[in-house]
Length: 257
Image (cartoon, rainbow, N blue to C red; front, side, top):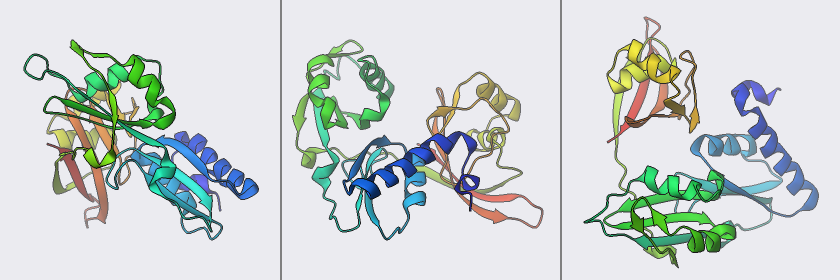
């Protein structure tokens, strides 16, 4: 069976990567730790490995409900422990009374260091505190070089994961029907805008699906896909439940409050 038929064409390189990890572990009997994976990559990782009798695997990003996680693939006889994921939690405070920091501000400052996004896990900004989860191999570099975000001077220090703040993201769910699973159609429904305006957002490169820019209005969405529009927040196609007698799709869509 051609495994590629179950996924999108643009996902084939990542599929090949997962298969190469599997081959590497099977040949060397040594575990393989990945960089941070976004939710779609985690889905592919999990789908390909499944319940393979020769391997054991786990995804972890600091806590079980982390959005971005590292994957660990190991021979079936290994017992995977949290400390094997090589994660470091860094924290800094800033004067909330004088400067407002947002998730994009922190991410932008991190990326300006020249570090790839795949080395960064979840980040939380709340009540004058910034916490970022990073791959341990870059933790010292981040501590020494990330000393300013926007107009705030910051000093990151490593702290224990038992001090990791709760991420209070709240998603509002809606059961509805849509005429198709096209990107422009779902954006129209989720954000309550015209299809023409939805198309403009897409064509201008302001829409991401699973953290990648998509400029094709007819791009077909699947269950679990995360959508983000610049300036309008994030949403997702939580589940496709089937079709109605009039051939409309019954779906659950969610939007971040």
